[in-house]
Picture 1 (cartoon, rainbow, N blue to C red):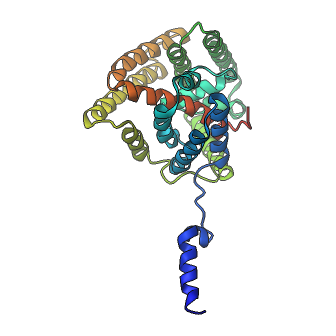
Picture 2 (picture 1 turned 120 degrees about the vertical axis):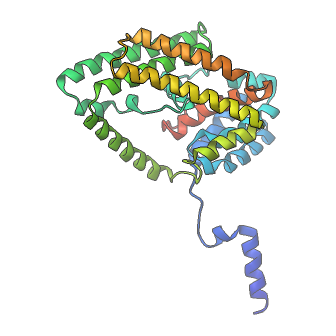
Picture 3 (picture 1 turned 135 degrees about the vertical axis):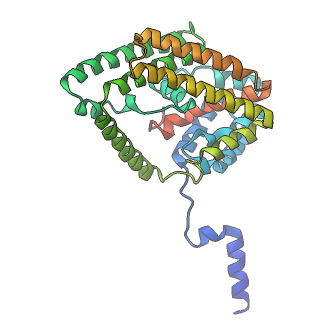
Length: 315
């Protein structure tokens, strides 16, 4: 009997895994967000049993990158290969329950320029002077009206997704630049500290980040690997992205420092020109399959962020 005990324990460890046996769990990733994403896809696309099962595996494997959308690249590649054409069209079309805040922030996040100014309204108001508050109210009203107009045009079909995303990014880039011009250095420090507190609170409530969630090199490499990008493609893309970011930052800095005195409309048009140039150069870097994977990734990222970032409980 004693001789059988080590064998039995070893067998148990082999079956259930050492980490689970000792009570250590991998808390990276948010099961709710992944479950709800899968539910959305199942409902919207009428996934088959095999598609659901396979998708679960890809979501489970992506938890090391939670909450970043890098966790979805392998799933996007799988869907590109295994969805029917009808399912792809449904996935890539604007959903009926589209919310302007969602597509605005998803677009913002996609370009890695999220600063949360538009999600900190109450705190921002508490640190502004009376004169600043008046300017801030005008800025917020303009931003809301501009985004609502773009959102309504997209939903009505009078704008393409590409046109809508360009306009939305233009509005958000202007708003961030206007905020940086409005706030003092001390106010910006207070805002950054509040961001950190909210981020820490969110992290605790969600179970923490995946082990690669803040490793930007690994996140980029995940995309490169899934897309099967060549060294030449990667080099060209990184050069284009650096130039794109530099152009936006130059516009931002010139506006904040008073080198240019653009109206909101002029600033938004300038951003649009930068985006158009970047998009035209970027699109020729990828082949047809890679571009489709990128579009699918973006479509599922919007659905994923609805649950992982915005905290919506269901539809």
